[in-house]
Length: 259
View 1 (cartoon, one colour):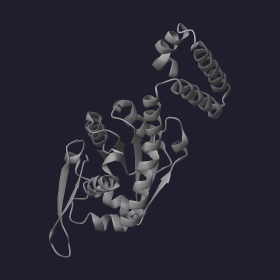
View 2 (cartoon, helix red, strand yellow):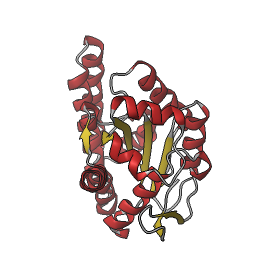
View 3 (cartoon, helix red, strand yellow):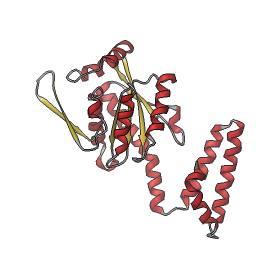
View 4 (cartoon, helix red, strand yellow):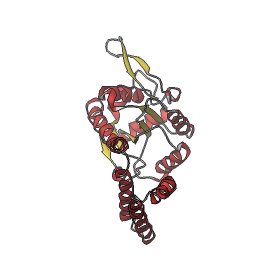
């Protein structure tokens, strides 16, 4: 995977003289990873690949290194904000999966929400019968959270893997939430349309840390409250969701950039 992405650049380094050692180090790490992969030691193989990637990054300009570090920190930032919000608003928790520490995770975390509290929050909005029945029976809503540091996705492959998780996995996923670090993303719309088209539930949102944690909370809240409205999935412009408070019947507006 690494060679496919950076092979041309590694070859150019070899002709650079001073940087030839980097190419040799990377090649050595990838060779180790290959042997470990064949022997069944996936854990050490992944560590070698990540080490090779890190060596490559250290030779890049400072701006590129900083962007790489920010991309790695993005996941933690998103999960920290959602963990606090889910606990306060839905009496739930966000639990990292074993894959969270993977170099290239599929599902970063699972949100587990109190079922009764979730349905109470959704009362003013349409709740699809299949999801409502499942939440009532199991007393929880389980959503897979997928965090990506940019807009580029192979949507078809991603959804195929997620569908396998729903069908054969042990996480018991009810729906999916995709969070991307960008201003706009066509892949969000494609993701939602494909997941919903397969009879599952998906929401997506874009969020940049510079906009502040409240923006993420608002977008997340809006996404959850429209979980059974596929038509409100995948749009990148800022959107407002107006609902009625059951006590006062006064309109309550929740704004955010969501799908």
